[in-house]
Length: 140
Image 1: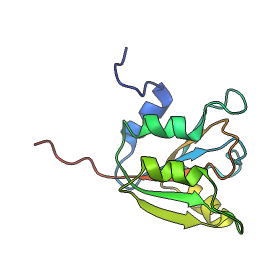
Image 2: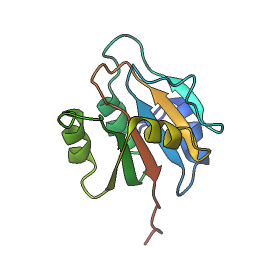
Image 3: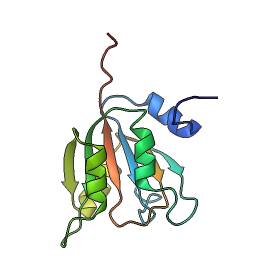
Image 4: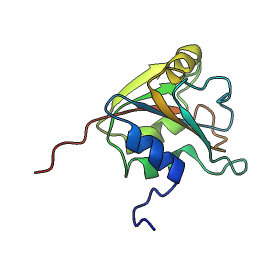
């Protein structure tokens, strides 16, 4: 039994095999994961019901396990910024922020560098985030 927060065996396996520059996609319940899956990505479905689990719940746990150097989000063509973005920024304060249009985001999220796609039941609009794994500094 593990004592850490992240205990999902498939997610742990994918993250332990990933390295610097690998990417992790966390999607909302509307994302077309089955048709936009990267060729090297393991897809894990955590969408038990509408609204559960949320992208931010998954993000909170992943941040206890991996360093993140950048995050990309899908922005709407027009209108105000989605409210979920402020929640992402609060969690990723010192992380490079990249905004992509819908189809640019799909292209990035289907890239061979994506090692893991986690599908949630989050119903918030534009609650998709693509994380690039950073570097674990040497032990001192």
